[in-house]
Length: 186
Ligand SMILES: Cc1cc2nc3c(=O)[nH]c(=O)nc-3n(C[C@H](O)[C@H](O)[C@H](O)COP(=O)(O)O)c2cc1C
Image 1 (tube, rainbow, N blue to C red):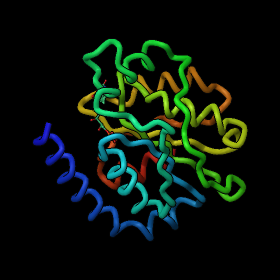
Image 2 (image 1 turned 30 degrees about the vertical axis):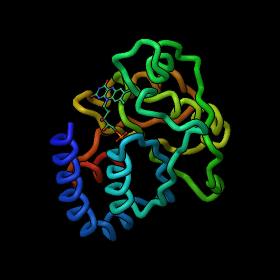
Image 3 (image 1 turned 120 degrees about the horizontal axis):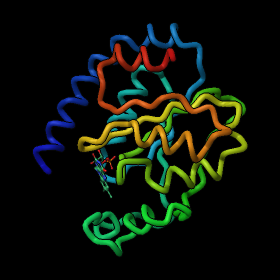
Image 4 (image 1 turned 180 degrees about the vertical axis):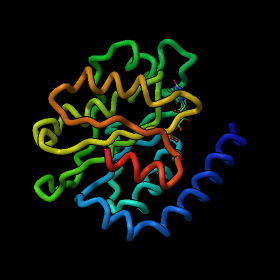
């Protein structure tokens, strides 16, 4: 686990240092007013959000559950744990703290999260439900971090759960800057 985190942080550091060199160019190429909204439990998705912020110039906004997740809460080996229960009962929506976004000034949202149980955590569904009306005219780019799961199941779950939103194909980070720039152009 520690080795995984070390490798993840090293990969992110390299990706971010490459990303900063193309930041100005990316801003010119992508005529957007983006924000990055993300949930992180152990920090990987925050590093990924920083890589995206370097490339896009977007402001980062962290989603915080009203009740933080404890170590016991994220024990996926325990059927009774909070994360397992939120996975098994897809109607659960853990409350989140209010966020400071002026939606009128934003046209693009990057929505980041760790993969939990092959898809987006319930906190992300809370965000999309709560702000769904304001999100209808925005372009949404989901991104994730994970041990190994690809983005595809989260992509499918988000499309199915939020058909009224303009959700683009997601991307698993870290990724090369060129791949991120290509993704944003879709
Ligand atoms: C409850 C829980 C479920 C997880 N499920 C998966 C999974 O299905 N596939 C996977 O590759 N990683 C899974 N992971 C690992 C996380 O996706 C990975 O460590 C991620 O980078 C953590 O991001 P964070 O540091 O921003 O919280 C899971 C982690 C937790 C805590």
